[in-house]
Length: 58
Image 1: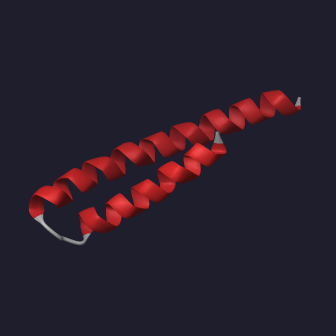
Image 2 (image 1 turned 135 degrees about the vertical axis):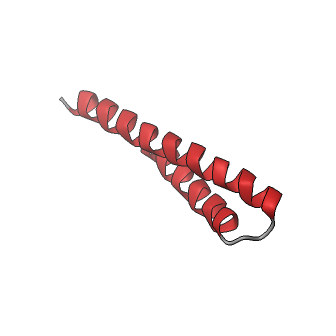
């Protein structure tokens, strides 16, 4: 599960680089939305991964 969290982090960083650098208005808007979505998915995946990991080790 943490593997997916890091994948979402990489995707969010790439989307942020394109979105916040002012490449093009339409692409920047889409990239900003994607950056937000993938950051939320990253945080959720980390939380679930830690919760499942804690249950598996105890």
